[in-house]
Image 1 (cartoon, helix red, strand yellow):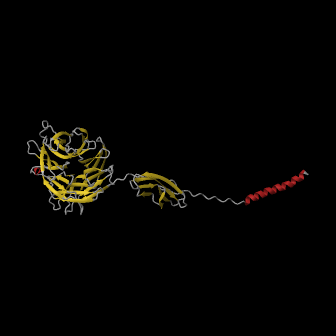
Image 2 (tube, rainbow, N blue to C red; image 1 turned 60 degrees about the horizontal axis):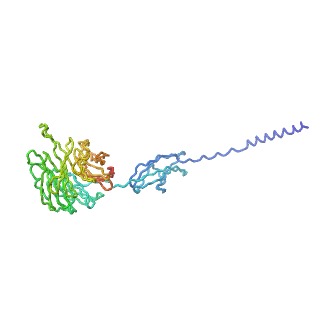
Image 3 (cartoon, rainbow, N blue to C red; image 1 turned 180 degrees about the vertical axis):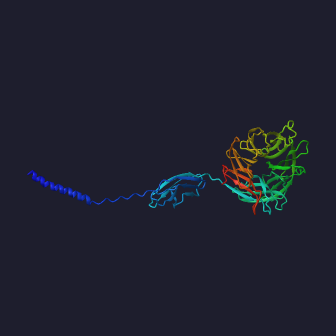
Length: 495
């Protein structure tokens, strides 16, 4: 019986195996799953430039794994600024100064898959910056001229004075240019008085007018530049030179003080320093000469609240008892500073310098009631209220004339002049700390062009204003020499 059952079971087992094999052979292959479309690859972003009102960013290309085209959306402070651009750079404009900004660049492929990078920046403080040019005068020849002095006026504008070619070709004459804070020309006037080869022009403001002086002349002009009177200081008009007025200031009573130097008829004296006091109408009250050495000159002055004069000049400190008499130029020219009362009487004097020929150009009073002077050499000195030197910097290159100095908002000092190198050199601007140590220097250059920084002022925003002369050896067509004025930020940048 068991044998019979076994025979019956075996066919069913064989039939089951056969059915399983047939079922396996008839099942369909599973459908392939779709491959996910990937977002663009990662990329890098850089802040290229930030100013007070704009910023520029750029980024590397975000390639797509499927080689789709990639475009970019730009967001700033949560707002979309630009969409579907293909460029790898963007400039934000019309921003606010001293403001924090953040944003992102989103890279998208054709399936709207995205990869993004964030960025942030802070805009800088706004500084008015420019480099503007002004013509001297219309003339059929190239002519030209030079600015020498610049002041900020009581109406918060600026006066620049110097010399320019007379349009009739007869020599040089006075000019005064008035500009506003933005550099717009308000007026320009010319005064046909000969100025010879003068190297100094000075302008100052009285309570009701401006006073301009150079060569042998003092001019009084109103606030619109109209001539009120002109005075020739006859004592400078002598046949033997050099003879030149270098500076002018007024006291609280509108008396006018004129300083300079001229040829001396005294034995063993080459030049004498001269102080002339005029009344408000240009009449001479007195004139005094100062001759403590063979070479003497007054170059600049300031008048304090007590109507006392602090005068910067040059003096010959050579010891002639020891010099070689075969030496054609044995003199040792140093800075010379004097304090005089309102009648020209000496209160104190001092001199200082080094082995260079120190030719002083400007003196300023400082916020701590001291004085700073600068000049050729070049040399920078700070001295106290009785003429004692506090510190000096005489390590500057002897070949770089320095014409003007101003105190900065951080109680340092900034000076301008010429960096002489090559054929043309460059306008130089140098920043010093409160101890007279150099912090930085900048130079402004133009091809085949002489740029000379002649006057510098510190501005309320911490920047600087420079009056410069721009000239070339040769001119083409309508090219002419120019007056150039720069307005910079506190780092000396004007662009």
